[in-house]
Every structure is written in structure tokens, then in C-alpha cells.
Image (tube, rainbow, N blue to C red; front, side):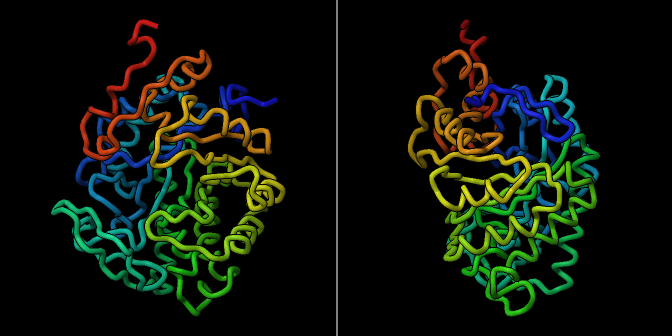
Length: 364
């Protein structure tokens, strides 16, 4: 039986284990989206993960979501991320960078006055956090074909910058209610052109972005993250059984590094279909209690159920937040650090970020 500790070959990378640190926004960048030295320390602490997928970074200014979110569209961003990748590489780690455009999840206060763009003028049914406090979400501007072409090019340029910054590859974020997910879902995509309507049209933007990024840096450096049916950020999907198989089929010949499925359930027909039709590497993120506490093993048992069902790698989020040495703790069967107040995830500073103890710090 495959375990999370077994090695795996991902393209040109030899992963020492099958545990992937999932991308998680932590709001520790500076006001311009440049990664900070504190971030380099945080990721270096977790370099024992088989693969780290660094937190979402925006490919252009209009795609900015919240304050202090990282970006990857200027030279300063590249320099900041290079300090992070250098620190992780020095500890023997491997990193991809997630690229994410917020779409309707944004506000002019967060993007230098730029108005959010989205597939359709459907606002987020919630407030947006800004430097001036929570504000009502604005109605996004429907993207023109020129906007779509520019955004596709921005994703490709961001991927090139990520490679320049020392990342082994990039993960295109197609889930959790952000721009690509907004194109996939009928609730947020009301278009009647070639990018809206039937599933074959709604997947088009995602396919164009992924193919452009693959052409820019090589498909072996590119992953795609999807979140079928996930309702985060006001999302609603009523036809996941047609949209996601169509998307997988459309990208099956691209030779991507991996497909990353959020909240994957090995008992569900959609997961089984994806595994059957996706010949490449599959990263699966298990269904774990949310917002309740994690299981005592941090998700290992559920992860190994996914491996038994055909997944190649398992991504965990909160367990890596609270345990910089998660791999070693799981290997020894040692207790895991409990996750502290969720608010500490996003407030900045070292508390709840780089101050979680490792076993060595506890004298174990």
C-alpha cells in the first residue's frame, strides 16, 4: 500500500514524500505585494514537504484580491520571491507558485483604483476587506474579448517571472471562487458568447490560460487546481458533472505537471472519473472538517485513502500551518501542534506564522 512517505517523481523533480503543502493565503507580503523576509523563514521551515505550492500570487494589478497579498508582475515581486525560493532550496525543498486572479473578488481600494473584472457583472454577495475596513463588494465589469486576451497574456508573463524567481513551476488557480472558477460556473458566468453558455464554452477561458502558461514555461512546469462544487466566495455550480469532465478532457493532451483537486472524495463518481481520464499526476486534497478542528493525524488517514483510490500526491493545508515539521511528526506518530486562532492566519507578523514549534524545539 502506498503511503504518504513514499517518494515520487514529478517531472524533473524527485519528491522525498507524497505530502504537498497546499497554497494558503497568509497576508504577510508588503503593501505592494512583495514577499517579505518573514515569508522566506516561514516557507524554509516547511521545506521537508515533498512539494510546497506557495500562496496565491496575482498576475496583474487588477487581479488583486485583499491587502498584503503576494503578486508576480513586477521585478520587485520577482526579487522578493527569489529570496523565498533561495531559502527553501537551501533547506532541500522544492516549490511551485500558485497564480491567481481574483476576478470579482477585489475592490478598487485594494488595486490602486482599478475596478474588478469578471466574466459577467455579478457581484460577490459579501463584503471585501480593504485597508479602510470591510466594504461592500462592487459590481465587476464584464470582461471584453480584449480583456480576456490581455489576462491570458498576463498569466503567461507571470509564469515566466515565477520561473525567473526560482520556482520549479506554477499552479494555475482554477477554483475557490476566483476568476477562472467564475468562468466555469453558470452562477457567475452569464455570457452568451464563446466564453459562456454550455459547458464547452465556459471551460474555454481556463483552457486558454493553461495552454498559454504551458507554452510560456513548458507544460512540465504547470499544474492546474480545480474545486468542483466548492461554494467558497459565493459560488454555486449546478452542473459539475458536465463541466469538469469536459475540462479534464480538453487538457488531457497538454502534458501538464499535475492536476490538483480540492476536497477530493474517493467515493464520489466525479473523482473516479477524473482519475480514470487524467493520465498525468493527480494531487488530491482530502475532505477534512471545516471550520472544525483537524483530526489528530492532520489528515494522513484521509490522504492515504486517496492514494489507495489512485491519487499520486496528497495536499494538506492547516496541518502544515501549525507544524513546520509535519512530515517528521507524522513519520514518528508524534502529536501535532493545534492550530491557533484562525485570525492569526491573516493579521501579519510572526505570531501564528513562524513561531509554531518543531519537535527539536520541544526537546523531542
